[in-house]
Image 1 (cartoon, one colour):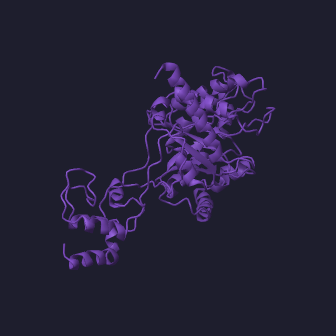
Image 2: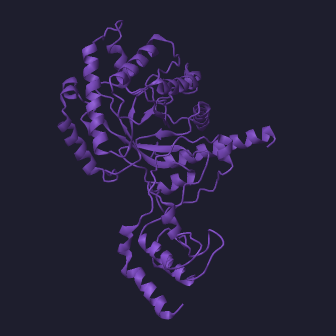
Image 3: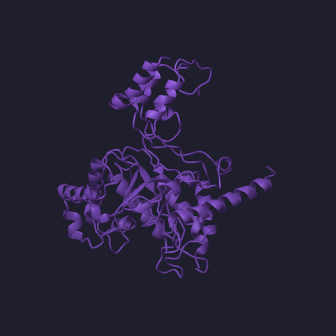
Length: 422
């Protein structure tokens, strides 16, 4: 190729980056369906080398765009145009021919234009498949600051828990405040919240969970429609449902692309007995609220299956049973059109139960691994680990704890394979 052509193409890489606006590469949605991988399948591609990635995972990753990063440095720029130039005119017999950005088996001007159309974009490396693939870190009103560390573990950093105050339901919310908040009131409050949370953009398409616990936690709904309850008050039940629906509608409207969930639907009773009167009252409340349309704009049911007991508590042996109950009740809920929901449980790193001798203690790694095994035995592959912030207790972080958990899962998987003779 002549020097003049080389110079012209190289200059084009600087002059024509605006061509990127004409890129026609498809942008598939990042909303992944439930993985069908088993623990043993994931183990095959798991790694204990937690190498950091320099780029955050993108919800709009394009395979076409990634093909333009010909030198694999994470950026489509002049250096990639030069790769095309250096291989200009070559024909290829394989799909990985150097310089063939559009994969048409020929390196020509079409490849130059294709690279230029994606000029300036950042490509990303998919998170490694590990025994934590399908897990999301979920913090309160923020994303984790350790993006690379989570990616190296195979954990997603695309879940945002919205505080109740953001939708006009703060912890000190009164009945009157909750019932009387109009759509415009809620829009104003949520708009202010979004203006201060610049990481949560209007086109965000990851998980968003609305955390409303005051003045009425979802687990309390059943008592207002149970004739045997001292709190029986169907009119209040309807008012509570309407209050929830208004707040959900505002979030749905202002974050239209997100995968929306709501905290507390369901929260199984910690005694783990599905047929008890207390549990049946809760379930009745969830079902009747769903029948009134409370969940119609919800995408994901998030059973709250935080561990409630430690090793010396009397009910320590009930963790597995209420974990299963939460998933089963979540699967039983329906929108008013009869459609079902994706299930992604919420688990935690700490014990939350004021009556427990272990309240606010870190859950042991063994107990976390046991609960994950129970969840996956129920056919659930995607779930979320919640904590308010990255720091768990001043001595360890969310990422570090998940790293320890991955090591435990890998150890168990290796022993299972050895026992099976595989």
